[in-house]
Image (cartoon, rainbow, N blue to C red):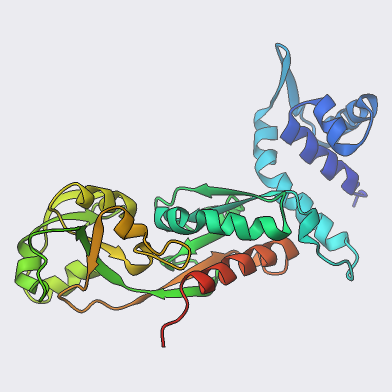
Length: 310
């Protein structure tokens, strides 16, 4: 078996990321000529040109495009394996971006607070939140996502989870809505009112719909939107009703979030089970110090934002 030069892996990551010999040289702390020689060696090892001239720029070959999705994680794992066992992790020196997949409600209510918490110890860390169209586990498996925040609805048994908070559903409407009296709404009044539903799939499979169906009732859906934050804005300017998690109403960092938007929440007239919001990650990130630190920041933030009620 031929010897493997792990320095080539680091150089390959820099070249694929920078798409520039000069930029890669600067990142590696090498001369341009030395980096150019390394590129030549990488071409020999991989049997591929990797970078091609296109006008004044370099572009990746198809093979290099595939490698660019795998090499960063491989390089990090190699560095972790070869690092001294007693080396202490220092977040103050951490300079990287983390990709988190979370619902719009988390970003709206806790995004700024999370960054503020991170800035206290790791000012060079960046956060990249991505849209959550479904519960597909593949981005976690492939390393495209560092951490997911939400409910566990995946058939991927290998994923790790840690509960962040216990949440429940409530109704929401505009302040001064004519249907909301001192005694609240009956199930019949509630079901017959106009509703904006929140569903990524477009299906009426929400726990509230299941609870109403068990009593022979169904919400009168007038609109379907993909996110709870969308539903909140719709009911703000209409007489429609919506269902949102209680965590979207307020928290320690945003105590008047819904009220400041002219919204009022109310208890639902049907029994709906509470649910857990969790941190979800791939097991290969279990012991990486930076990932463990990130999860600790998210966990402590949620504990402060939504302290348990006795």
